[in-house]
Length: 372
Image (tube, rainbow, N blue to C red; front, side, top):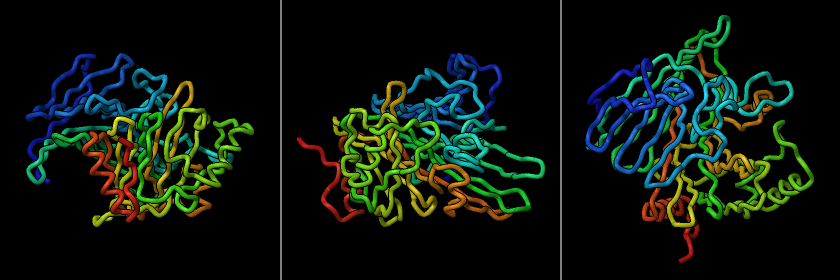
């Protein structure tokens, strides 16, 4: 990848009006400030745009490609200043972790999804890059997290939007700058919109060996007999979860753990949520970098989300539970880790090609093919 230009970003003096930062052909970037005071940048190409919060966890607030909104439904009309993700839970994607992750269980003392989702970034910049003749905008932020007598890391989240694509890359690199090993828990928390009658396409069967429902009930869910019966039904046969039905099945939420996904020749796997019109939300990544894949579906009166693919280094049951499972990684002094997912929107023709690619990963009948 060659660097063509680099522009430092400054948060001072922004207004609700877009302030152009860089333009190159169909690519452009502009800074602005929400009425809430949260600063944002709008990255555009010929198919749509994404809105990112460069100084607030580099959260991807929303995205719209090919006229389709990708982000979850919530009560948040705009991002709000917050220290934890619950204070502004309406985004398309955020970096969950890094020292702690998941929903705290009794005995845990961390915030839900850790310290990073709303963390203050100390600086940010945008790059114009080119790879194999294709130009892209790359947004990079930087956070140094240091605690006296505690952890010390340097993290660089990044977003890359290529020209002509409905998909973009969401990345994070973290380096342990302390002299002691650092515990690491990370999830690329991607919150696509719930799609009634949408069909999940994955390179694995919808059976109990590959799609396991979460049995643990988190503290924020109030279980009743119907909810517990739904968990039992999915445990016995997860096949009905292939198609999303807006019938109360996912109110409260349901969480699944996926195993044994197929990969392609580049050791990447891919999943889609096929919409009734034939287009799709899509995500692909390299499983070796993560080790776990979580699915989170919720369709209630105040939120609607189809987190059909959340690549993670652990399951989301809080620090203590994941430590006991052996799911908390250690970065040695000076060690680093890098995570990357590609996500976005596919038109119907692109979704057909992606379905064929996923089918080739599983050597099974073509998944996700919609009836004519």
